[in-house]
Amino acid sequence: RTIRETERFVTHRLDEATHSTGPGGRMAFAAADIANEYNVDMIFVPTMTGGTAKMLAALRPRAGIMALCASKAKEQELGMFYGIRAKGIARYGSADAMFRMTEREAERARIRRYLVVFGTPNRGGGADTIKYVER
Image (cartoon, rainbow, N blue to C red; front, side, top):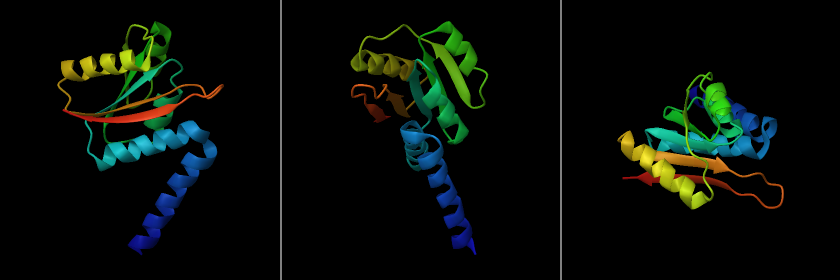
């Protein structure tokens, strides 16, 4: 009985991530699973649109979600979603600069284990990244 219920749950979650939300949903699904598996303290999501943060929040990972927003309007919008803490940051010019900003935020909050999840639009060859950090 337990195995049947578990399989039904896992199948539903895979369907949800694969079919209803596309590549961004699959990335959010993977990040939530990694966060739960590695018992991370926080998932940082640098964002311009908020899409990944919203999808991730819908999956209810055990870790907190910190959306790092380059616009005040996006910070206010994401702050209204369950499970998301939104924080304004300066615009970043590269992935390296974004990772450095995220490291500083983690150090300030004394967070030991965290993920950084971000994507770029796939128009013209974007990339999606999930980075695990343990200090």
